[in-house]
Image (spheres, rainbow, N blue to C red):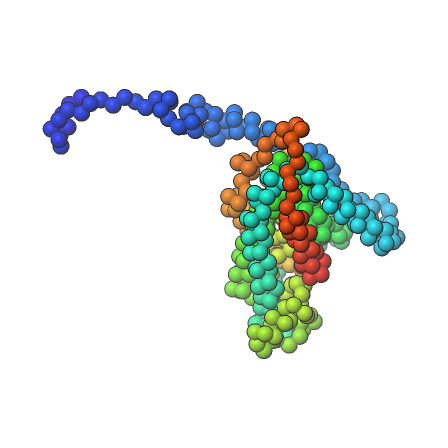
Length: 382
């Protein structure tokens, strides 16, 4: 080693750093155990898939397939079911859920995610409250009282052309398969399946990412339809659905929670709010339930059919549905830090371990959020 040209002294040779001096992650990365696609990553993924129970796969697929199968095999069977029987089944399901919540042994893992879920849920409610009145952008359309023709939609034209030539395509285009309650039921089945040990994740952790994705994606949705007013696919929509434009902020707020109540507008098109919600179910199953493919495949198929149905029924343009999937999927990936599946898989509970205590406030939070969801989806027809 020669003299240092700046200091005029000899530098002592430095030994190369050894793996013993490196941090544990560095040592593991050096031998390939933490490299992308390495054996440890594959082992962790295989362990997660092995812990995904088959029961959720059957339940989620049944939620989506039961109604169309009955409608195909026994037309009119669902209409013949008495309303009292439906309410009795719903009450029985609520009792079973409550019993399972009380007997759930690993509440400590759930309690750790309650504060973040609460913050995300409140953010979602704030956004929905704002968006419920923003649909009055239809009143800003300078041609709202004119029968302005809708834009050309090539997907709609193609489906109608195929339906004219094929009875199967015509039946598929006219059939109503899934709606928002089906997707909501499947989406709620995923976090509640932890009560039956179907997924190795926290239910509150999963729903934290879900509700924050709803919030952020719909903020982008409001920004999109507020920037550009597109003509409704149904000419004369405003005159048929809305009262005269509100004169002030208070009247706009009152209309948003009395006359409109979540039914959507005529020009809040890009992108579809329904599509942005529907796609959350297959995204969540794909991320946190990787061990089974039946339910995820059925959810994607239901999403594709329901989106095309909205286009054929002139509820949305096809670009609205396509962008709903793309934007929501992107937001879902951006928010991976909320509950990253690669880092948050729960350890298996030791056999014979005593159950964790349940905080009464957590039980109240669960049923309170379910009540709010019911008001938003069922009462508001969101």
